[in-house]
Image (tube, rainbow, N blue to C red; front, top):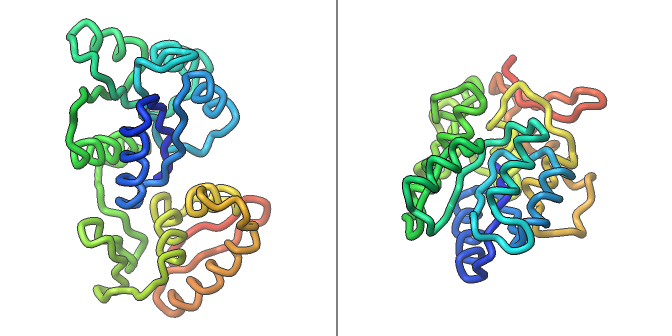
Amino acid sequence: MRILLAEDDHNLGTWLSRALEHAGIQVEWVNDGRLADRALQQHDNYDALVLDLGLPGLDGQAVLQRLRDRDQRLPALILTARDSLDERVRSLNAGADDFLAKPFELAELEARLHALVRRARGNEHPRLACGALVYDNPRKQFMLHGEPLALSPREHAVLRVLVQRSGEPFSKQQILDRVFSDDEDVHPEAVEVFVHRLRKRLDGSGVRITTLRGLGYALETG
């Protein structure tokens, strides 16, 4: 999962970015509403938006309104200290999908994000799987035919991207954005290397990574 976090509190933004990435969620963090609006216009590979209402430059309500006016259906979770009924109703009517008041527990934010993304994909089941390959979320471990699959951290991250939407292609750039978002020096060819290694690890398992010309890589069975 890759999210855009729009939060102007430096301490909270820093902590959330690190904590969510530790939980396997890629985070792009901006601290200004104008930057959030620009990022949403320029990139379409976010899985969800976490949006503070009290942003400088352009407030959260305006960012949300512009998002919906462009008919972008990205799941949006409002994260704010404004915990009034009127504010909740206003945000939900403006197109927010969920609302979480500060202070909050990290585990609840993670759970709400996963639920939002599942609903957006039309899948209410949290189990990530493709044939005999299953991702055990509590243990952050891939299982293949019931046995742990030994992977390097980068291999794990690439496979996690592919299994989230098995059967659908990801371009090299989309994989780069999700796995190497903090490293600008990584080239698309690096994705080829990790895909090659993963193919070897999955060989003979009934699960494979296919190359779809002009589209990218997809995780499939067969």
